[in-house]
Image (spheres, rainbow, N blue to C red):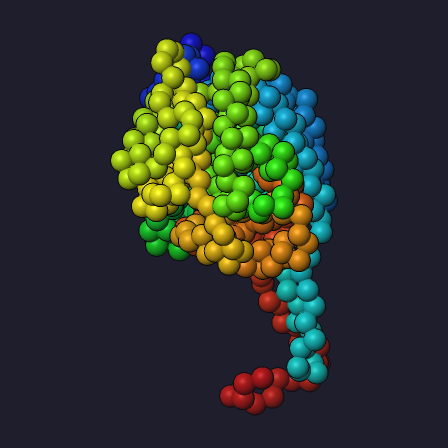
Length: 487
Ligand code: NAD
């Protein structure tokens, strides 16, 4: 069994207690993970606070911070195969995805490395002749970052990159499910040359997250996870009045019009719902398809879904691996059963795959005659696609927006003017037209409603880790006149 450690104050440290991490491909424990105590949380936050105020970090130029981030990016690129292997082992995410995603994580750090010395303040044309007023953009302080198991390195990079570029320090709580890649990332981070305490990595369950996010020294909480946990986080922030950015789930519509390139749309839908075994916040989990092509489209989709190569996540030819936990697989079984009871028709899949590991097949539920099927509304983190049909464009918009979430959406049509109308009408943080699941460090990512608030990626994400200081400087040498007149 491998043993992992926390990273606090620039050192790898043991925890008093551990928990076992299980390989989702076979259900066997393979590593001991440190389980943070409240004392560990306090030590990590203290280290981050000391790091934040230490001259080696606080007085470092933004350009120098950027250079360290470039070094980190190179280290990640060099270590990508090792990190990918660990993420695959600990979460069941297939090696094809972890390899490509982690190589791209290096690009996120490069983007924020380049941005570090472009986070500018402003000069104000103030309405007083003897004053100069300008705005300084300063780092908010200690950031608590809390992430879920899926794409953990990626979801951490979109927090750590902009936070460090802005001059903050970070305590990251890795998910208790599959924390290995983040604990290994900490060892790699250590080689980049950052001062101690700039990044601290701990792990453990909800109680560790609660202690961290309510900690009085935390200024901002960057959270990715489910809406229910987000409610706890917001309540926790009543303690420290920290600002929050919340990247939550979705029930994203994937809309296909009858003039679409159906081969492309089918491939995008397969990737949109079955990639990452459906454990993706932007999963296109509601297929909204025009009635005239519904049967043809479902026939094509069923054939592709049934051809998905399910297998060991560490094999390069595997297209879909196991779910991360047995509990997650049981939720899939329950969701399908409850939806079928409500009238949903099982097109393919639907039953857990027997044998070792937490495997569940690509599953499609036709909900055309089951408007109350829970699979249409419940965010579910797994390979379960719900299907509804529409006749008119207005109907497609109504169905697309009939959700409390608002993260992503996809529109497949070759009609340019219709595409523009759909872009305007859909309530979501991302609209992909004739594509799906594309991301880039340059483009902001996030949602509204139950999908949360704040944006990751792009320039805005770095600004969210800053606060504005207004500076007033009087330029007159004359004595200050009447002290009781407001100036
Ligand atoms: P989760 O909300 O259960 O857990 C996420 C993290 O929060 C974990 O590290 C967990 O330990 C921690 N946590 C749990 N309770 C806490 C508490 N009371 N206080 C503080 N921290 C606490 O999510 P999950 O089940 O691990 O992940 C799946 C969810 O994440 C889905 O809803 C999915 O849509 C969402 N997600 C969103 C995005 C996005 O960018 N929008 C990306 C990936 C996943």
